[in-house]
Image (cartoon, rainbow, N blue to C red):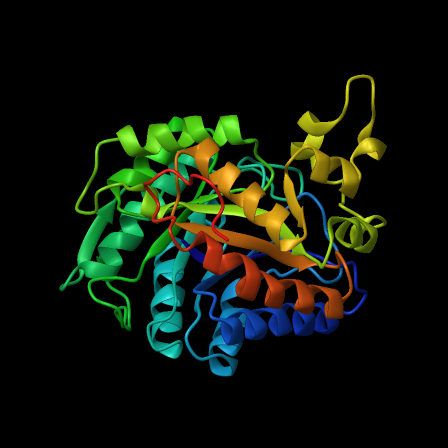
Length: 352
């Protein structure tokens, strides 16, 4: 199993620079510790809420992060395709691929909510249809050796080309935000993309989505469990009691994340979505090295196996000192005990 980050910003700073610096420090530490990749959430103009320190342009952050790190691969998680011209997205990705010396991964999706909202305005068509056409147009722009004509439903043009072409041949890897939509999972399989799954979904739902992806018709790259990117918040401390004490008063943003509603207890409200409840529900993996190892292996078995675990970050859950200590303990005391998980075989008992 490989490890990486899903930087899903939620810090509530009044100055964006402060949040971006904290996010950057986390990526630099992940690179130092040997994590393989980092996906940076993009919450920009076209969302239904705004905070002063949102990350509206992940690609800009990624190019700076590449200059401050050595080996970690970086990608936006994700670029909301219906709101940008596909040729501009194709160009931006290719430039980032060059500026990162081939460590860039593109990231595609519909965007938060996947539909028109009042801040977004009216779209010229269904967001999902627009995203799928944009994907085909971007792939064409990356790989076509000659200028080409495009006569799609949403975009049309003649003699189109981009400069530069991607540094990575024939193209960089692409992560696709996968929801419960079968069509998105199917296009992820058909185009050979990396499936990116959200951190707030229950294991039973994820297992069904994975099966849809694995059973979908494939293109040049066969769908496999090794390509699955699963996200969870992970926090390691010396004892379970210390982990719970460190995180007890953390703000999980329950007022904003309606996707956490399924974790509200019967007769309860959003106020019941505390850090402790989400740990008890198994959504967050927190405790000492032994308990965190068991939780991850159980999660792995519930899904049938996967290749990469992305640690959720970009949030003020615990102090920076506590988060550093947690990650160092994770990579030293937990990650080696998960080395036998190859993305396909069952987890079995925890390794000592």
